View 1 (cartoon, protein in one colour):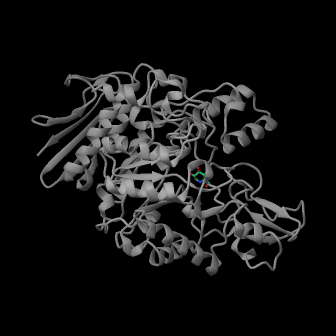
View 2: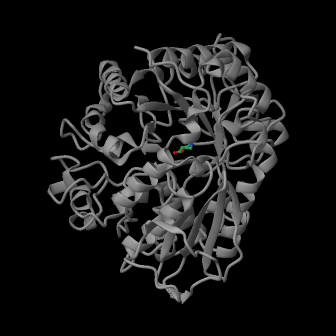
Length: 541
Ligand code: NOJ
C-alpha cells in the first residue's frame, strides 16, 4: 500500500499528534495499548483535526526502554499486534487522510537484535563492525563517557576482549555509522517502510550518529551531516516526507543546516532549548528550579527569528520523555483549564509545525506515585538507585521523580470515567492517574468550553488561515508576566496575548482596536486587566 504522492512542504501546514502506543488504547485487555486500539481511535484523532500521527516505536523489542530498543526493524512488537495490524492501520489512516510517521531509532539497536547477537560472538564475525568496540581489559574502562541512563557508556564482552559503546542502557548498543555496510542496511529498512506508505520519520537521537567516542565527542560529530545527507539521498529525499530529528544540542546555526530549505537534510528538528529553562545549565534534569520566564520568551523568540526563511521550527511543550506541561508551567489545580488553553494558544500561534502529545489536548496532568515500585521507566529507576547510593534522601528523589519523571507522560490515556479510564479492562502496565474521573475524553467532548475544543479550533485555524503557517513573528514588549507577540502576513495581523501566571496583571499597552477575537479562554475581554492565565488570539484582515 502506498499513500498518494505528497506535495512539497505539505508538513508546513500539518499538525502532528504523537501516540505512545503502550499507553494509548488497549484492544485485547492485556493492560497494554496496541495497534488495534489505535485504529479504534482514529475517528477521535480526526475529530481533533490533526492530520499526522507520530507513532512511537512499534517494532519488535524486548522493552528494556519501551520499544526504543529494537530487536527487529521489520517486525511488530508482540504486545502491539502483527504486521497485518500495522498494514491495516496505515490503510485506515490513509483512507481518513491521516498520515503516519514512524519513529526511526538508528543510533542503537537492542542487544537482542540479530546483528548484535552475532557481533558479540567474536571480532571476526561479519556483524562485529556494525557496533562500536574498543579493545581493553575488564575493569579498565576506555574512557569516562557516561550512559544517559546512569553508569558508564562502556560494557565489557569477554568473548571479544573488548568494550562496546551504549549511550543508553547496556541493552541498547550504539551502531557504528562509520560502517557503510551497516548504513546501507538501515537505508534499505527505511525504504521498506517508505514503500509501505508511511509519510515520514521522527529520528531518535539523530545528533549522536556522527559520534567519535574516543575523542569524547557525542553530539554533532564531524560526519553527522554527511550521514544525514546520504540518508536523505538514499531514502526519503525525493518523496517529500516529513522528517524531524531529535537534536538536544542544536543551536540556530545547526538547525538551519538540518532544516535547510534546499531539502538536502530534514524538514525540521526538535530542539530543546526552551524545555531546559527550569533548571540551571549543565545540571541534571532532576534538579529543577523555577521557570525563568523572561528567558522562555527570549529563547522561543530567538528560534522564531532565527529560522525565518532559513529553516523550519517544530513547536512542542510535551512528549513521552517530558512531564506534562500543565503541571510543569501551568497550573494543574484551580486553573487547569485556563492555563492549559493559554499554553496551547501561545505555542500554536507561532510559526512552525505543532506537535500535540496524547492527552495534552484534554489537559492530562503529572502523577505522583508514592512507591518507587509503581514506576516503570528505566531512567527513573536507575536514577533512584544511583541517588540513594549518593546519599540523597528518599523524599528528595521522589520529589524529582514527581516533577520530571518520564512516567508522568506515560500513564494510560484517559478516555472515560469507567474502570481504568476506558484504556483497558485489565490492570494497565502503569497506573492510571487517579484524576481520570474528572479529566477524560468523554467529559471533554461533552463540554463545549473544554481544552479539547481550544486545540480543535487552533488546528482548524492553522488549516484555514495562511497567516498561522506563513506569517512572520515579532515579540511585543510587555510586562514581566505577559507573553505577547504578533504575526504579519499579506497585510493581515495576528496578535497573541497571554498572562503566563495566576496573578492578574494590567492589560498590556497593545493596540487591539478593531481586532476580531479568534480565541479566548475567558468569556469577554476586560480591557483593564488580564486575569489568571488569560490568553487571547486576535486578528485583523
Ligand atoms: C529518545 C527517546 O525519546 C527516549 O524515549 C529514549 O529513551 C531514548 N531516545 C533512547 O532511544
